[in-house]
Image 1 (cartoon, helix red, strand yellow):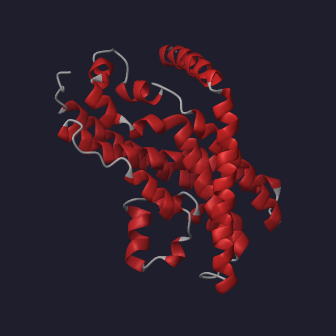
Image 2 (cartoon, rainbow, N blue to C red):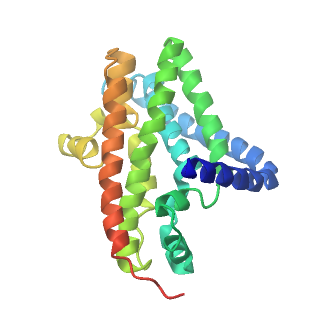
Length: 258
């Protein structure tokens, strides 16, 4: 109950902050729409040369892209501050967070909102629905994809925390959290296009294959409904492992003294 009340108060503050930048929200939606259109056009040019990629049609490849974008936009909406731990360390903000009797990660996540990310979420959600209709999938497949994306966003948060362990170790002098964006780029494409070694790495070590490629193949194409349980469990287990590692480094963190 305590954290539920705190979350409500954080939401109030963040919503007020977003209301101040209402025009930014609409510009973000427009900007994200243009960016996604350009990305799809680029894929369209590729398919003018190669009619299919590893058995994937153009629409199926766009679905993989859409699912990855939806998952990443959920991460940006709710967990984007996990990318900023090095900044918090350099400014001394992390020290003020650690002295409060509240879970540090909970505070970091709710520290501030990113108005641009909500535009990204709106565009990616529309894109997933549109592509599902184009492929002739029933409405419940779309609902399943949205449900799974809520969990696959934890993979991006886990990768951000993993990158930030370097910041905790170096007192903010180094930061690898930005590689989360590179993993996002890899998640936009089917696992089948990668080599066997890279496919194994992207499935079992840095599990971005579970974000879009595996849900699309197992649920939409093969209708294996038990993956609705398996995929969320994989996402939660990965996040818990990384979170425990992050806490270990956090306990060894030494204040910057600022």
